[in-house]
Length: 198
Image (cartoon, rainbow, N blue to C red):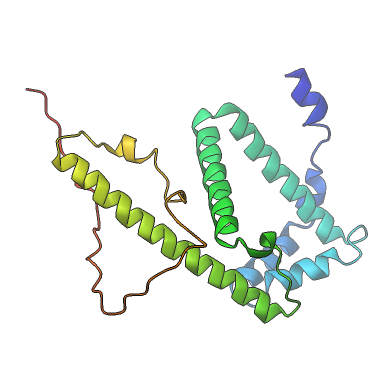
């Protein structure tokens, strides 16, 4: 525990500053929640001369308190650590997948126009999501086929698979477009068999 006290918990929260500006902080929160002011506008205003802005300092202290509470929960709660780790891995897999999809230019957007940058990002995400839909559809069919062949496919087994696979995809090959082909219907679910002990 000495290591955490030395390197993580190095300062104390200024609760008096939070208490003093609580009414103003609640006003800001209500204005944002009711849509009267954009969060970006507030951040811009608070960030201006932030060292002199008492409301900014109060929000910073509140943020430190929230982060400290979360950190203490994280250190003491194994389930929370598992959840955070799983979400982090999922996010990293998604980012790696969209980088793989956008293979040209090593992920660098060379356009200077904001609208063009947004288009590139949205088109990349569209292709990535369509590829994931294809993967999920294929995986669902395979799992159902395996079950029909007598294999025991459980939710725990399926949870170890992710739709970010790309080994079967050829980004550089020729794609034959078949506009007259009617796609097979999507399978909505895996038919998990209920196993009973005899």
